[in-house]
Image 1: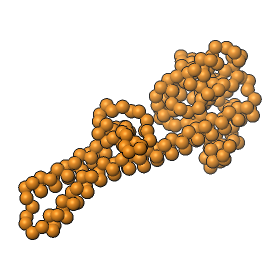
Image 2 (image 1 turned 60 degrees about the vertical axis):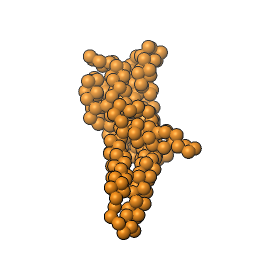
Image 3 (image 1 turned 135 degrees about the vertical axis):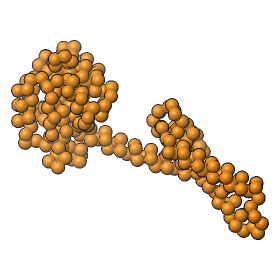
Image 4 (image 1 turned 180 degrees about the horizontal axis):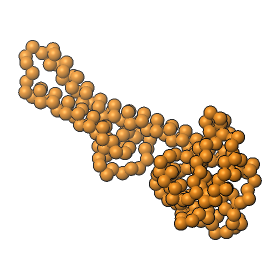
Length: 237
């Protein structure tokens, strides 16, 4: 387990705790006071949803039995939208293991569960696991974004190469000839520059990343990628 992904004093784990019993929140805060976690404590599912739309967490502890909206429904909504659709979530419940809520909670997007009363070492271990998973996922996402940007840059350079090269060749010819540029040559130059402008416009209006076959691999399809309503399928290499 890489220390870089674990909570530390310099990079504490950001945890959202949801429990309608404020005494439970107070006790948990005291238990974790000397450990590297930043707790955000709320006492309702609705407030948890609001927080999840405002802030990214690295782990969520969600009580199952909450008023108005239970923890399982809240988990499902968190998974649907907001900043924490992939944040690891662990359920807390006083109900015995084997009840339907366990299956329902995992199907709603929960990672694991703890039954009350829980042992503090077990809770601490699960919190560390959540933070580690969040940071590993973020590292993978960052690498994927970097790879996509490199591939997009390569595809854009490929698309720009031909009209720019043609414009350069024609410009060199015009510079060497004694006669003024003919209307046909000017029209050709405008055409090459127009193609370049169109490609730059497509780059500025990228909506997704769609590839097309090129040689033995794939290359960015600018026309498809910049078209409104284009498929949002993931990058392909």
